[in-house]
Length: 172
Image (cartoon, rainbow, N blue to C red; front, side, top):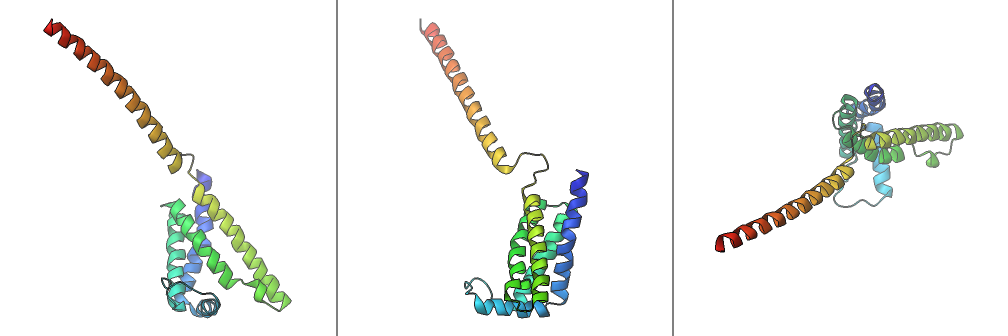
């Protein structure tokens, strides 16, 4: 329990800082996003405004980071941050596009750091804190309901037989 209370804010700090930076200084990220939007076909549902995309991602990073750090909806926050981290990593740390060996190495190191963060987020996203997950709860509720229905059906059958015997006694 204490590990979670310590680990979540530590993991979230990177995202809070990145979200604040994306909102305050979207310039470089906007250029990188525009470059990516030119290369990749995007669905019509996705806005084609790179500045808007960068700022929206900043809001997700900041909001998700604050939620994760505070322990509020940590599984949802971790999932959102993980989903946001993938395109962020591809846009900001595209080491495969670098020709300079030093820049390539630096970008590759940052890319791998983000992959490590993604691993931490995935662990946080599936952490049920020792409580059963939603799937188990749903399956268990189904089992309990079926068992109770079976018992109710048996009880109703016994009650019906008892009423039938009483009716016969009254008629006779």
